[in-house]
Length: 157
Image (cartoon, rainbow, N blue to C red; front, side, top):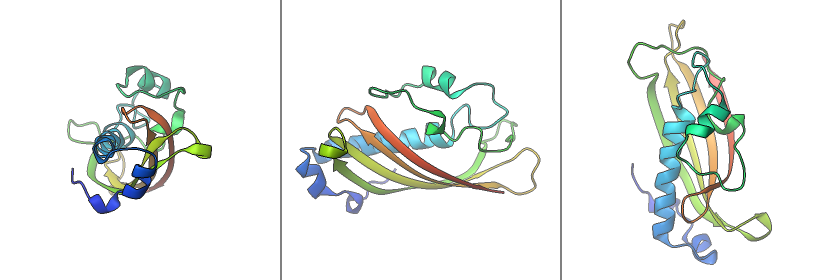
């Protein structure tokens, strides 16, 4: 994981009384969540038995004052994937496009991390990879609790 200071809106972080250290820690949490849960969750494909509620009950991430909906992870959007012991994704590329802060009328004071990814998945019955592009935003409390998210998934095979 590489830290790109140019992606940080230090003026907004200062306005909402966040430190660079808090923003760095939240960025690390956001990228880890994005890769391990959104892009490679145990319930990623339609072959896996389970629901988002099952995932939520098992996740170590803390959602503050709400329960996430089905869209929180890339669930039921891909065809059945190869289950041969190798990774389901053949390639994942993640970019942090912005780390900023928000608050006031938009809601509680929070650190916002904006990410995007391109991932290639190995479908069970396809000769070529299934391609996914994901735009994702996560809002965090200073201690790493998730207080909001939004997403857009584009799947092509």
